[in-house]
Amino acid sequence: MAEPAQPVLGMGIIRVIDSISDHIGRLFAWLIIPLVGGLSYEVFARYLFDAPTIWAYDTTYMLYGSHFMLGAGYTLLRKGHIRTDIFYNNFSPRTQGAIDATLYLLFFFPGIIYFLWAGAAEAVHSWTLLERSDASPWRPPLYPFKTVIPIAAFLLLLQGISEFFKSLHAARKGEWV
Image (cartoon, rainbow, N blue to C red; front, side):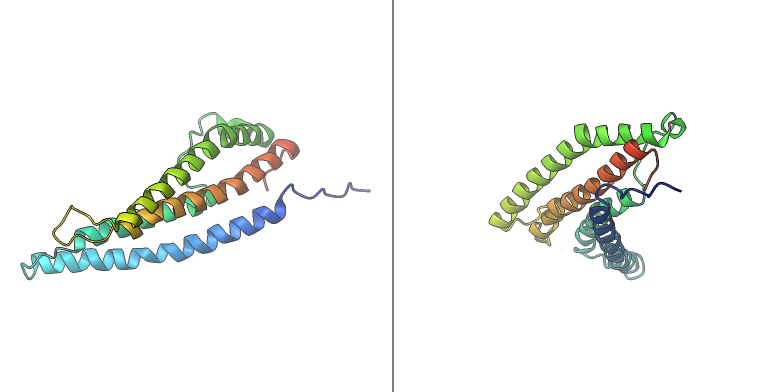
């Protein structure tokens, strides 16, 4: 008789976090539409009508930065971040899991927690000052854009927890979830 399968450590947490990251990633992917719209408008206004805007640059860098940062957790879920696989791919899932779990503990979590803390402090400071950009005469508010930093760090930290549990499972059982 076959041995009953043991439940994956933290499987409920993994499912919930992965679902959150997937839904949020798909939602934030739609930021590409106003980004492309703003860039397209600027190109037409500048080159067809010789009437460049003062708002397009600020709007597009803020949308692109938000799109890039808010998608980081989704990218981690989909294994899209850069990884040096020269040796890693040749390791067993047990070794891969042990390496990943160790690196999450030693480097990922401390770095992302600091990023979250520093980003939150910067966002609060920006909101306190109602900070505005000095990069253009339009002077758009920066505080909503700076709020994206701690939100993105939190979402990345959340997905990191899921990936850590997956790594622990691989290290213990020799198979990936």
